[in-house]
Length: 78
Image 1 (cartoon, rainbow, N blue to C red):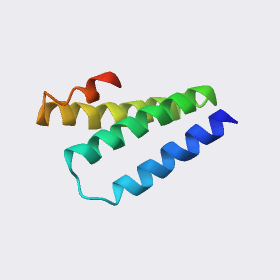
Image 2: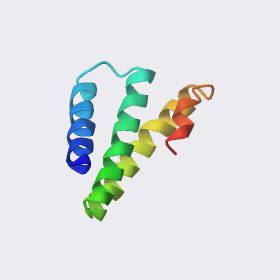
Image 3: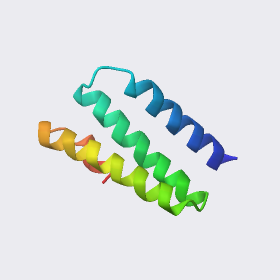
Image 4: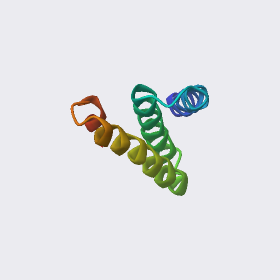
């Protein structure tokens, strides 16, 4: 199902990206992946997991915006 695929691919993105150097692009990808995972958690009715994923995603994306306010893609996930 789409819920399963979204959860699996978001987690796979998180796992791979966390192993990479912490660049602004990688922080953006992590923030985006956590945001997508939070949406999947909501679809799966895992509301606490959704909250924690969304919070983690927001933290990464806010870090991107602090580092470079011109990184407009980061604003789209908030």
